[in-house]
Image 1: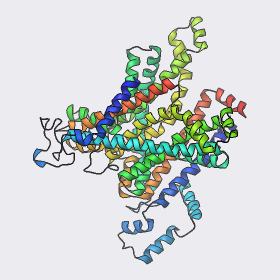
Image 2: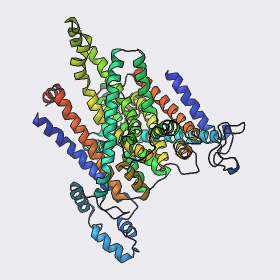
Image 3: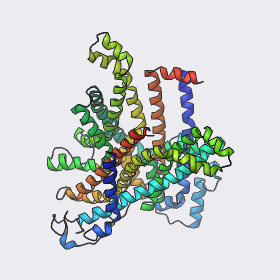
Image 4: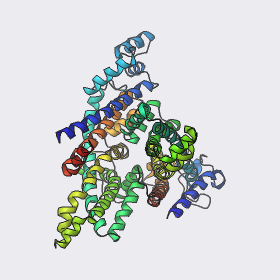
Length: 263
Length: 314
């Protein structure tokens, strides 16, 4: 199951990566003469209200959903590992301050804080990405910090310190390898959430701005034609559903295999 | 017991404090100048003198710490300032919209408990049967489907195709059906899973074996003993997932044009109406913290062992 989900996710990433080569049409090219067309040989999934090719928009849309989710994952992971290890390693007042900060951020429901930040700085993809990063690093930081605290007193760390390894070497060589498993599990599940959050924000009109293709934004555009052409909103939704289910099943599978709890 | 309650409440205070700091920071890192926004809203041309006057009025020229204390005092009185857009007090506007959101949330919670309770218990009792499979399917589906899409799918099937239910708005009970279903599916997914695993865990316990040897019927073991303990995680789950419910109302209110606080919040985001945003964010944090606290206390009442454990630690 793990291999199956992971390879399907890989296929989605490959599609996103190769979008310019596999997409049959330009995703933003308006062609009003052929708007709202049914599937045909040249437009396999038909066209939208501006005559843009649906299949191409779906393919390009995967770049935003998957690409930005991966970006958020990578950057919040990096911040989380740095803050978490420093906090756990240093201990004392620095640890308390950083952990209270984490608790403060976790006191807000994720999407509320993201929306608050976007509200203050105005809509736009950059703001959305920064806001999502800001709320996500906390989870990695906490995992990392707790791991460091429990590892710190173990003999092999003491041995490394006595033999003259610097703090950074110890964090890099001994601590990070130990936090890999819980982070992979949480990261996989968070990817699913990130994709949903990005699409929800785009749906609200706060994330990606037109004419760019994004699954959530496509659903939003499609809802205007819910009576005549429901497939416009159905296709992108199915894709979000499939990708998120894949990440969730993968995360569950990994958490069972590694024997780590989720959060 | 009272000592424990007091301790838990004290523990919530620093978090509420941080939440007020974050909401205060939101306004101060915002590129929108409150003085200018107010004047623009009142259709007054913002001359430098007027701006200066307004800034003084709002206390924007005073030290940050003083401003923060001032904000804190006002928040306690539920005074969140006036909307940049309408110049009316934010809390008055919120008060008219809150009942709609509470109605929606209440229906969804009721629905999710009504569905997940039997589903989770049956899935655990008849493990690996079709009902267990169904519960797992619903869990994955509910946790992975974008809420706004689910809302539109329901509109498509029940309002457009079958023409059974109204598309949007709030009024009679038919209006609440689709939004409540949309909002509750994710909760059903989470609760069902929690119940299933907690009932499964309890069924392994020795007291269940003992009750069986005593010749008690399975049904009465389940209803009288297992369920009483297995339901505790569900209550925790309801508290923890308050955030999901709240963010859910934002999305669902948007889809169904439900005139609640969530929809007001989204409008405020588009209008950069910072006081309203601040009010919502603060409100959300408080709700979250208070729910967790209540959950803690209910759990202690249900399972006094927690209290004993707390004592043993100190």
